[in-house]
Image 1 (tube, rainbow, N blue to C red):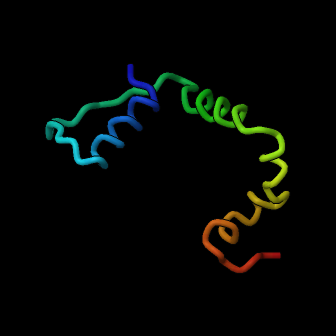
Image 2 (image 1 turned 45 degrees about the vertical axis):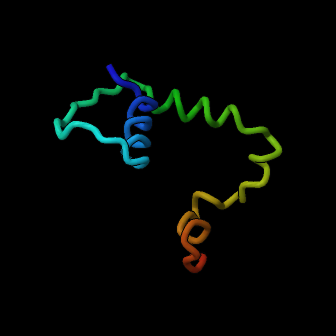
Image 3 (image 1 turned 180 degrees about the vertical axis):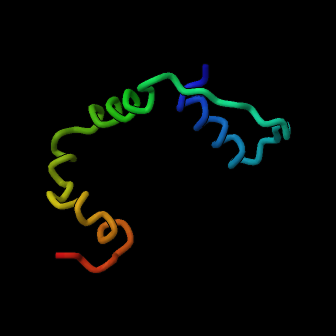
Amino acid sequence: MATATKQRWRTAEVARGKKRSTRRVAVEFAAGSLETELSAIGKAVPAREWAKVPADYFARLDHYLHGAPKKK
């Protein structure tokens, strides 16, 4: 079973121009593996950095990521 981390490595190898076979590989993820990895990433960020995230970040995601007008 591959994990999301292994999948990212494969993607990074392709981006760096490493040759790989044209054969497609089915990738299975363990149940909850994405949740586990995201949780670990979130825990690695210091609290002072989380404090910098605007309170309405998720409600106005398009505004913060793409500069769209804020919706009321």
